[in-house]
Amino acid sequence: MHPSRRAWLTALSCLGLLLCAAASSHAQEGSLRIGSKRFTESYILAEVLAQTASPHTASPPVVRQGLGNTAIVYEALRSGGIDLYAEYTGTIGLEILKNPQPLTREAMNAALAPLGLGAAIPLGFNDGYALAMRAADADRLGVRSLSDLARHPELKLGLSNEFIGRADGWQGLAARYGFGQKPTGLDHGLAYDAIAAKQIDVIDIYTTDAKIDHLGLRVLEDDRRYFPRYDAVLLYRLDVPTRFPQAWAALQKLEGRIDERAMIAMNARAELQGVAFDVIARDFLAQGKHSGPAGAESAARGFAAKLFGSDLGRLARQHLLLVAVSVGLAILIAVPLGILVFPHLRLRAVVLGLTGLLQTVPSLAMLAVLISLIGAIGTLPALVALTLYSLLPIMRNTVTGLAEVPVGLRQAGTALGMTGGQSLRLVLLPLSLPTLLAGVRTATTIAIGTATIAAFIGAGGFGERIVTGLALNDRELLVAGAVPAAVLALLSEGVFELIEYWLRRGQRQAS
Image 1 (spheres, helix red, strand yellow):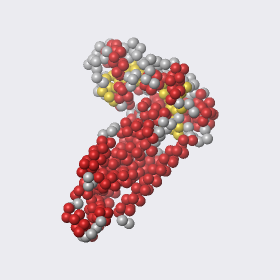
Image 2 (cartoon, rainbow, N blue to C red):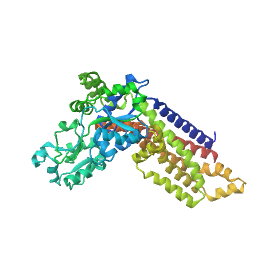
Image 3 (tube, rainbow, N blue to C red):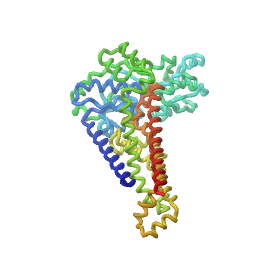
Image 4 (cartoon, rainbow, N blue to C red):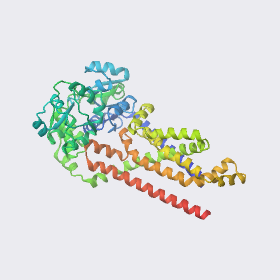
């Protein structure tokens, strides 16, 4: 089969897989879709909600775990990618509705209604923001409140990036207390490691975090009452009670059922014992307390069990789908576009410049924008983002390969009476194929690494383990996600080495 026909068949196959992925996403619209943010408590609450609703729905609820920060999970809710998730009243009022003052639930719902959203079913606990430091250092320095902390500008603050950027986060807090420190941005889970290792002195915490007591931290008093209450509620689309009446009735029975002590205990089981989120939720719903054997069994899981877990096949299929389809579509777009702009120097510079500009857009920002534009989360926006990131190396190498063909060979084709299309098909493309293939090779490697980010919007892949490992600060789970991705990258390099070997052997035989 001619190489150009093979490329077109590959691209068409990838397009078919993309359509299948979109169809699969559409099929899930009939199910109750529950989302979560990327921290332990949100993972657990998503499982509690799903397991509560499951007996009362025609098909099992779809749980979209670890969708990232507030901006991404809220955008997923507003666009219809999910139907509900556990949110906090302080976040809804200050971060989502941008209201500078705390809102009553009635006022909150009045503001949410025009957006097609509502807040209901208070779960029974407050999980507020606070700052904490090592208790021994706090005693030594006499720091018990945030006002005391403001008098110690030498202390190093390591705060989560979301907290630094939130409307109810660092900027307002610094203005209220007159903080002069410049915080370092850290992942919330990694900040606990950093403060335990004495790399930083103060971190932001959620008041139901399990590691506060475990690491001997002192929660500093908010003596000027900056932080509002963060009561856990359900943020939902207003059509959920009518679409899933029985499930909604079951969810309403969770009102007031989870107090702060119960939430801290569930967080501790996940972070300190390694118990799976679904097990924690099932135990809580069954008896309101954890059972020893389940925690012991999950805690005993070693690295090998995490690496070769039952989810390995599913994650591998998802990761391969994301990479194969995105690179295939990028070939279908970038190669013809590269051929089209090659003869026109100015147009070529503009197109390559715009394609290069896409590479500078941060992955999470790209995904958030695509969720808003497409109105969906999961595989489809992830594939679009990965395809856009794959365009530049393929297009640039297509242009470079064509430019490297000697002028004499081009003129020889013309002298033989070849048309422009024949010269392109029989001379230019075959001679530029090794350089073009190098671009596809680079794009594939980039896609394998970048595809791990797709887990932030529920697209799966090996990034699912990495995201969960970050949330739990579980290094073994992080590595269990990174190692298969690295192996996949090595395997792809081996495949391209074989392809290049066959090409070189074919060229030698032809000559």
